[in-house]
Image 1 (cartoon, rainbow, N blue to C red):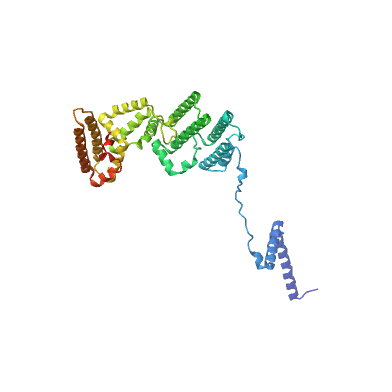
Image 2: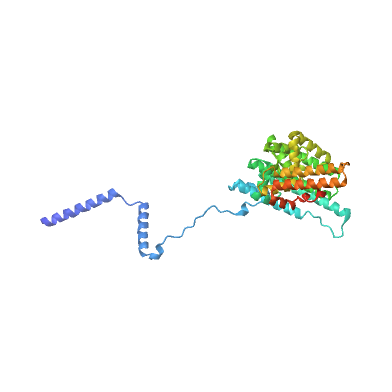
Length: 413
């Protein structure tokens, strides 16, 4: 059967399209499982997004998690372990030192509070003294152990006795003036060393309860020797010499007016070194002030050494500058800007007047009337000279500030 031409052409085209479709399908192959999952996910996301309310599209809140810190992981009763833990988390050495020192000071305070022996009210006499001495010794040993523990952590020569002193700039300035020029670390070590000595000496004195025995003096001498040796390891010979001279001379600065002499700084320092031969700073009641009193023999030896160094004339200047009446007169002359030698002139005039009065009193060739007349005349001349040197205003003030001798010859003696 023959098909007409249009039908035959249509069938041929349809058959060709089928063959082409089959060829394309074989070339691309079926989709993989990943592609199907991705397509499905995209389709699902699109559908979900299109159906989700707008309010639910905001981003979810995020939480930043940092390295958590808990003090309980660092805290330790043992100070060495505490310092190790602090350094392990990067704590600065200064902060570690401050924390350990604070712990040490608190422990020292607790020992001091617990040092008083538990005695009944009626315990007295030698039993009380023995109990107090034993308790003081136990407290001293406990405090030494605390200091040793602290030093194992932060190093030797820590300043535990009075932390407030190291925090007050004025007190630090005074101590630096006493010790002389020192690097900061050396300064703190010396301050700690002297404070430690002072605390141990105070503990020794406390144990004696006012009954100072030969064995106590021996123990104190051994303590001084130990700290001298330790100071010598901290300071160079020149630094130790400078500090010793300064500390020996500090009490003298309040006892005389160096401004009234022509001594230079080097000579004053040498006087301090001379004085240090007789005054050991470690024998003072406190390392910042005070001094051991010298025997008459030691004082004469000191003066002889100073006279030999300065010479007779300049040693007389030094002695005059230490006289209380001269110091008052010198201060008065400075207040009114008088010449530097005004006070010295008036002071020497008084000394000469006293010497002349003694000479007239010993002169048996004079009658009482002649002696009285000469003394009256001399007194008038002295008053006139003082008026010329000091002036009317200062002379009037001087009468009430140590110059009563001008009108009362009995004070010339």
